[in-house]
Image 1 (cartoon, helix red, strand yellow):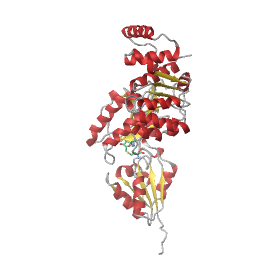
Image 2: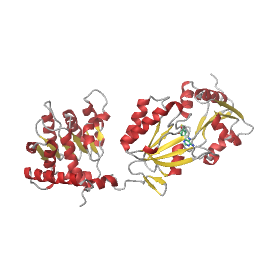
Image 3: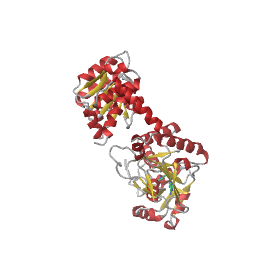
Image 4: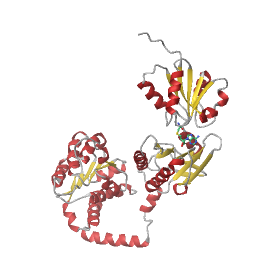
Length: 446
Ligand code: SAH
């Protein structure tokens, strides 16, 4: 079969967020070189001064596939620039081009030209809103079901990413935006939000607000939700690079911990401490851990089942070094004063969910503090994984009458320092209490 090389070429061009000045030189050259310009009317209008004398094909919004077909067809014979706003590979037309060309085996040379995406334009207009790790979520549920959008937003927030929100609203989707803001409020409190409308083009508006102050926005708007480190100073929203201290304790949380509580609360704490000391007077870390367990359970006899193996201070040192915490279940994570990775979220296959999660996190377990409060099978899995990937410290208090006691016995035999409970007693609450006690010691100024 004789295949004639096509003479044409398809450029998929990101033209940036607005005016020509935010377009790359390469994008401009591709447009100049093109015989045909294909795009959505609004984008084509934005570059009208660059395309005089060229043949232009526009299609209505939402007719992306038509645009792709036309562009690829024309590109068999001609040089074509398919125009996309911002960056073509970020909620743009590029994936459609690639998918279609591959599926239909279209023999056309394709070159994608990146552009300044809305998040990047908005971040600079606000100050330096993004700065470090960030996640991007589109609230449009045209191509992705809302349940997925919601879940990704949730995880981005729980990972403390700065979150850029694209496609926040349209006439039909006001409800989604309201729901999204509710999720943000629930998981990030009244965080700072940069609201940027028409970045880099006519009608540009830049505002910095609190989540509770954001009401309606339109589809020409992008939002950047700040994380726990984001600050607003002199009208600029910025997220410093790196943490304000390496243990990730925000100023507010630290103030709360240093006794910024009510008089009544302090009195209760003092009396409680007095009573606990009468039950168990031993000083130092181990004494504190046991008093914590008594306080959490309201049960003095718990002190008889707490077991320490190895150097308990190693747990404090590990946390001071900023080691990661891996918990078996969400209930443990919820009780902790630092964030943790939860094994059940990483379950695959048909093992019990926590055991599978622990195995899948094997490499990450090495050097971590592992907190198992619920699941004996997670504790067994940990014992296997620990041979190759030893954690730095283990708190294991799985609870119940099936395997709990045996699993903890096995943990005590590992060459890793640990705190466990003997027998069936334990649970997520005790587990979190023990880890929190280690965290408090780690956070104490020397
Ligand atoms: N490919 C584009 C995004 C297309 S999705 C890019 O990389 O930027 C469309 C969404 O992007 C809009 O709903 C809006 O949230 C955001 N957006 C695009 N251009 C913008 C601009 N100039 N100002 C503010 N938001 C913009």
